Length: 92
Image (tube, one colour):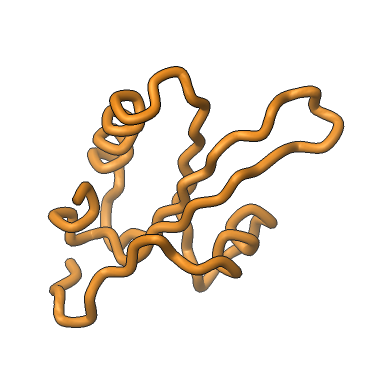
């Protein structure tokens, strides 16, 4: 429901990532493709994640499909989004 009322969100992806050799456990990553500003949205997502999964490490990444320069963005775009804005919805 978080993304449904946020018209700037086009798609959202979820992945489990680990950095080999870091000694850190794997963590969840939420990738979000947005139209327009995401500043307020990022704060809202962080608050929802903190309530839904307290103590769980979750990273957020903004995704630009036309310029997926980082390996993380490119990898997320190869997965199926868990949220896809309906075509009939209006994007800002």
